[in-house]
Length: 214
Image (cartoon, rainbow, N blue to C red):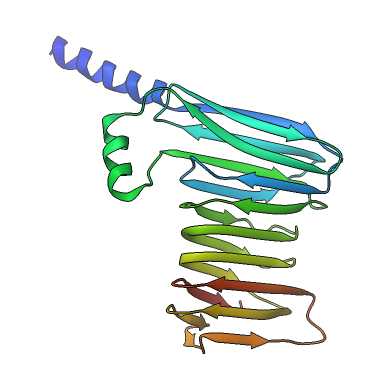
């Protein structure tokens, strides 16, 4: 019984200390924010309630992880760096999928900034941000929720989800599907209106695009 209790305590301790969370909060006068997702499995982008940019990083599989900020009057670069030993499980899974770093980040940005996201294999979620947004990735699941500003998305493969209202659409996929409210559309779909308040452009080779008007 004592051995079982000690084993259980060690398991809980390992789980607790493997969760490594760090954050940075800063103010900037720059109008552009670049986010580089190398090393991340998931990124969530949302609007900040203040004039500060807030960055939260959650990583399990490395001894050390850093948020690197480059801040000047014109732009901000946000990058992530991981140091230390990866677990055998992560190394094995990366060999197969090149994913599962077990690291994700949340970035909160004031509404008056333009946001650019760059990456390879990463899933991205936007909580209906009101920033002009451009995303350039290789592969991933991109959930944008409601489109509230001009948005550009380019990816090789993956799935794209968004809710659209008063939005001009320019959607292109070579071998994927485009569906709006469940209805299949042409590979190159466009819809424009003079009354639209913003633009949504998606270009992909193998990706699927699923939109709703709700």
